[in-house]
Image (tube, rainbow, N blue to C red):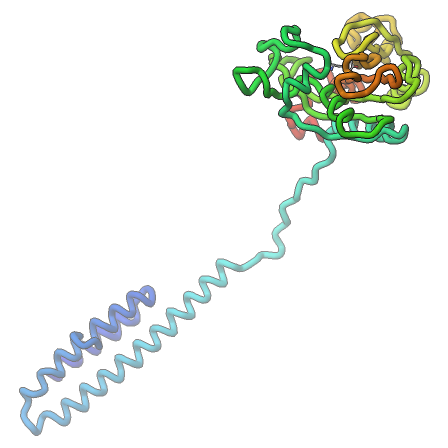
Length: 341
Ligand code: DAH
């Protein structure tokens, strides 16, 4: 028995010392000191000993138990310390490692162009409106005098949500004219920038989503010369004093008369070059006097009030301002491109 006790002691101490973690150590505690453990098994045999042998053996057994318990506690502490050390090592911060640089962005060139346009119009007393991109065909077409069957309502050009062609992604910012007429007091001076959508294939000059800026003035005695004077003043602020414009007759269902405004090419001064595709002029917007029917549909008496409106493509303007030759660059958001502005 003495030998058994000595064996248990030696084995247990070695095992405790080699335990990899506290779970393993606990298993060893059960194995040696538990109720069904090896030491207990030996103690159970005490009854078989003679009365003389028993006290000495009892004392030895108690010594072994005490030694095991002590070793167990020491091993536990050692494991705890090691775990703490490992954790600290893992969490250590090396303050000498250079930090990751955080990329700070800046305004997209198209929005810089828009901000400039907004500033110019706000300076002239215009209010900037925001409106829905999901629009009723009623506002996008009917209320703008483009009735059923008008070519611009075609399915091949327009993103409709329903088979009845009633709900759509707006194809122009012009419905904002109607929203303004419905909600604002006269006189009205607004611009309404925003996204518009058309079923166009992507290429250097087309995108199924692009931006327009709508503008509208309604007051008494508003004339075509107010339209021309205002737009000429805006263009001079955008492109510089003395910028030459021309107004060409055109057709839009919601204006009468209608026109398009061109700006003389800044590159060649009107002689014709690759920038203006040999034309000498660059088209920047559509405009006109608001059709009396459009005013009437919104409850405004065309005998008392008149107004003008325009709609311009924002990308085209930004491309001109920043000398960008491919529309796709504006939307791809490649930072190598955007960083240049
Ligand atoms: N909505 C027209 C378009 O997308 C542009 C336009 C033309 C707007 C004349 C107007 C306007 O307000 O008066 O082509």
